[in-house]
Image (cartoon, rainbow, N blue to C red):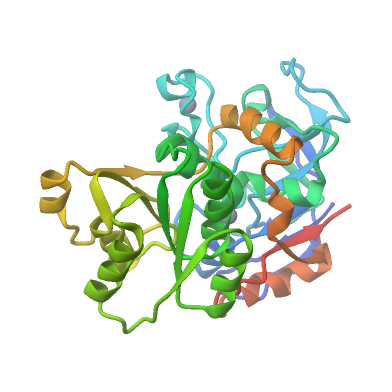
Length: 348
Ligand SMILES: [Zn+2]
Ligand SMILES: [Zn+2]
């Protein structure tokens, strides 16, 4: 098969002819029809993720058709249209049995510790447990983004924050996850305030139903918090979709008493252990919740709402490219994040 590979971090990836993957016990081989291009792929290529071994094929958000299943697999057959969450879980541990597959201690991720989906075929382990059947009405290109950004946003808004009709939600950061949060929270009946430094990102948030709150990197955090409190009257929910010490802290400080802050954006490098206003968390009985990906079992509701038109992941599609364009697209993710929507490659 053809696959994108790199032999060393930060060296140009190439499209190469490689051996077809073997189907592991209880697993499946998927013929990839579409794969998303995500900034996490760029971080892996930079060598920021120590689970990656070389040579490596990136890609963790995909949709396609089952090409081969191991004999133990009972729920899926060759030819089924499928996707999978980017966190592939074991299916046997206490977390998996409770449906919380996104925090399985024995998880694996294509494009990180497993070969990824920038390829004509990708392996999904524990296929009965991890594969998700795609209804016919859902396009492969739109489905490719469900496993990562749209699914991540769905889990944060619906499962973790439990956003309700009439609540006020502040979203900090309007990249791929943040804009998905805007759409999903708006669909849940929330009033959404969207914070970003980029006019393009704010315009995209406005188009999805949010009230834009422009800021700049040099605006003092106190001023931003004050403006958010004034505009919201104290937010019911804040979601840090960017991931920085500044946005995490501002999110917590912009809440009303007993509000919920959800941390979705990864806190990396010098922001890994930020100083947070825990006195406020105690005094106002705030909830601070982590959010990590999406459980395989949450897809049913997500796909239903896409099917009946309440949610539309296709609204976030940006440029559509081919397998041969993936190396350049991956390297290009190192530039400033754009708000032009998600880049997806059509593989077949
Ligand atoms: Zn991703
Ligand atoms: Zn597990």
